[in-house]
Every structure is written in C-alpha cells, then in structure tokens.
Image (cartoon, rainbow, N blue to C red; front, side):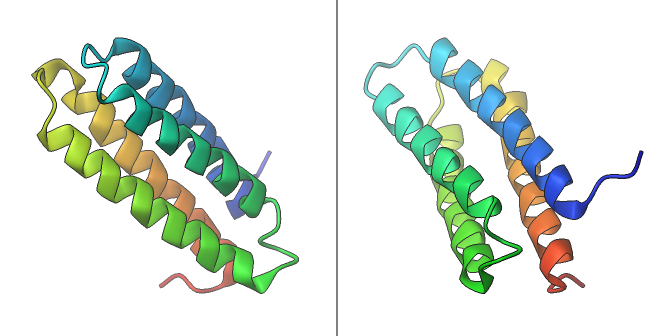
Length: 112
C-alpha cells in the first residue's frame, strides 16, 4: 500500500518523538531535561501543523521553521552531550526531522 508524502512525514515525526522521549529518559543531567521537554512541545505543535499543510499554505512554512529550530537545539545538545552512546540517537532524530521536511516539500511541490 502506497503512502502519501504527508503520511511519511507523520510517520517520521512519530519516530522522532519516540527517539526524543528515549533521549529525555536517558539524560543524566537534570539541567538539560527541560530543554528536551521544550522540544517535545514543539514537535507536538509540528504534528498539529502537519495536519493543516494541505489546507493552509502557511502551515508548511511553520513546520519547516519549527524543524529548523528543533534541529538547531538538537545539534547544541548533541555537541554538549556527556556520552558518545547517545550520538546515534541524535543522528536518528535529525534524520527523521529531515524526512518530515522532505515529506512536506513533496506534499507542497516545493522539493527538488
């Protein structure tokens, strides 16, 4: 069964949310946990906006901007992480965020 680009984007977002939860639960630095929780909230909002992409042309732009913000924060968290064991989790998260962005681009005809 074929899926649409937005279905693929939602699937990738679900995977990213799951990875973010693992990251939050495994973090040993309590000062970092609120930042990770903030990212979870942004991904929740991103999910809502993904549902509006087909009916609201502005929604795609909001999603891509949010993904960029989350990616920037993840990059900062990754390079300041105290253990190399979590590096694959960060990489997977960034890859899934990219899949979301590519799905939005394909759904809106803005991809290359």
